[in-house]
Length: 489
Image 1 (cartoon, rainbow, N blue to C red):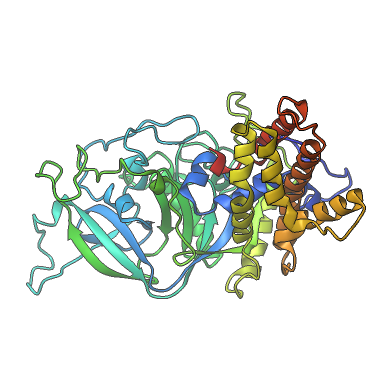
Image 2: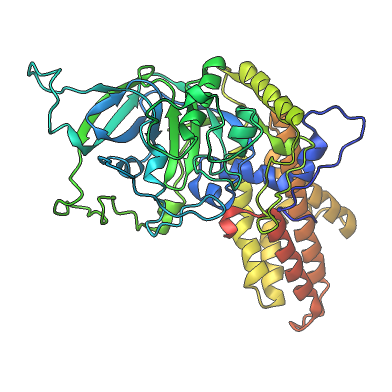
């Protein structure tokens, strides 16, 4: 059983052309399974920050999105939107001089004490603005002191379904840890991935908009690609939440509200604010597990494309971060081939009917069924009866007790177990076939381990000091490590 953290060169035939492979997908089953299970989930992106995958995503009509800035003005070109009010409110402030900056760990995760607060500069205004005049005065051209020098929170509503490119992992974070590898190496086809400008010199206007070095050039490149692929922008997750880089605010959005925020030094309003004007985000455990939800964004899993299914070396050269995949060891030809394949999938799936299978839903079913019991057996079980009871609960649904031969009965049950949540699924695209191979590899490993443990404990002598259930416990610890599910963290 290979660990879920193994990212070396996947093995294929020497004569196999460079292309997605079901064999590679099976070898990297845990990483692929986690990519789907973690999609549009902030906690999953926190646990697995270095995403390697993409998919088309549709934001339906009528979804509310939010934007914070330092003026009563609506973006007119490209800029960011947040799904959550609290996320946008972090940036609904007037900035003078150097904006506040949080610390960051090597994984790209914010280390600020305010959980989930990313660099204020990370979502600084990216494009142009159009003043908002909500009154009947004839003062459209007059600068109002009430409209400048303060924070403003804008709320928008989508006027029709809008299609975006979803980039998984903590792709909205910045830094050199690999969180932006897929954007810089694949989408932008550059030779470096870093928080420095890598686009043409004219990508950074003078004066450059505030924000991390290179982020404006990155946004411009992503939007140029989205224009070519007929998409409205990209969806990314950062420490504070999930965001959209909307390439044209005048297309598909209507502003329904623009309200001035309390000044940072003003007396606290209901709900409170942290020092410096940040909304209070010392929040509950539930907030860390917040999910965007299918009602606000639908992923087309049949358009899923990942570096994980290509025979490329994803090893992290940083020996201290072996669990984080990187694209730094891939060749330029390999990266261009992945980008070209992604482009072909986007062109094929853009505007297509909804996918027949939601692989994230399948992943949810598997995790809900097994995660709690596996964690209990791996870390908390202390008796043989714990193992007998839990394995019976998990596995009896697959057993046909009309079959007299025990070995034959168990073999058939294990086979049923491995495909139980995937039976009858319609595989419409190559992405579906690759995901099926990856998911089957994961569920087959789960079922083989659990049936093996069941055989161990049912052959026990009945004494809790017998080694069999302890061996079963060791097998479960290995399985949990192999799977690497975010719910185990």
